[in-house]
Length: 227
Image (tube, rainbow, N blue to C red; front, side):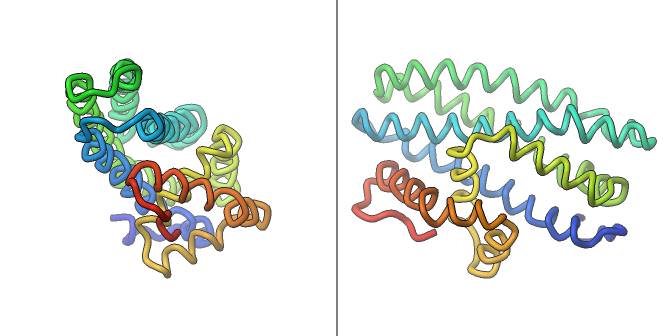
């Protein structure tokens, strides 16, 4: 549906078209966790990396929906779009409730990473993934097309700045690593081009190394993934 939308501000639309790619990256990142949790004896280092990975992905979702609630929904509702946005508060609440439970079982598993403690965590992560998919689908099918048609380029740039300000640098590196990990070379080049010079410098000098190191610990490889 997004590909069919044409608004009056193509530069902002160009930025928006990358968001579904980010959505798929979040989903894949959580799908990987289910496999990692089948390890009967992950060791403290790997268990800590898995917990940080899950916590980072959940934090990215929290920031995204928080900015939507505070900035995007009020703008759209003020322009007569309240009815199509009615499902979103419930979707936000569903995610928040599940995040609390996931964090609880994640702490339990991290304290004693065994198959028994992994079982409820995997169950709740599966439930969270289904809820996240519903939210991301609504975002792509309803919210982003409305944004493309009703928000100006300056307003969308303000949304992006708000997300960046609310996202710690380590989580920004995680987000970019997740996207690049599942991108084609063309998609990766496009994502990197949209970064500021300072952000690109941080990624190449620090963020990329950190992400590779994280993947080493998570997947037990001697060398990190190429991103």
